[in-house]
Image (cartoon, rainbow, N blue to C red; front, top):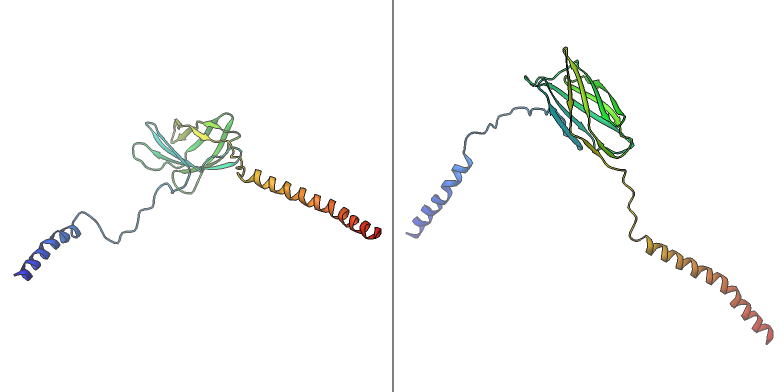
Length: 190
């Protein structure tokens, strides 16, 4: 009797587990993964759209005084098709501009920019494509001031120990010959 009850209990306990494993709605076929349009890069991403174009801009974490590589992805707003053959100009304000060139990939453009100082730079992109022109304003890019190297918390201790060692070595060097002279003088008197 106990054996039958344990078999029934075990069967009832394992019944929901089969339903959890076998469920529909998932495709487990051998399909190749779809490549992302924008590569996964660390840094900043800004996006904007007008009634004609969509623009996504990616750049590495900006640093004042160093060159930054900027990627621009341009697509048609209505069809989401990449726009190739467009002429783009990039104005960052504060007398910072960048030359934009088209890459081999459709709708992908690139530029290099150097931010002279820390501050907020609001990029303005002018697009000329297929007889249509548009201005696209993106959110401001914060450029932090160059980081100063951190001062070690142990620096005062290290300086103090170095001064003590230097003073001790100087005192030893200065007083040792005098002590030896005193010994020689004492021997000469006796």
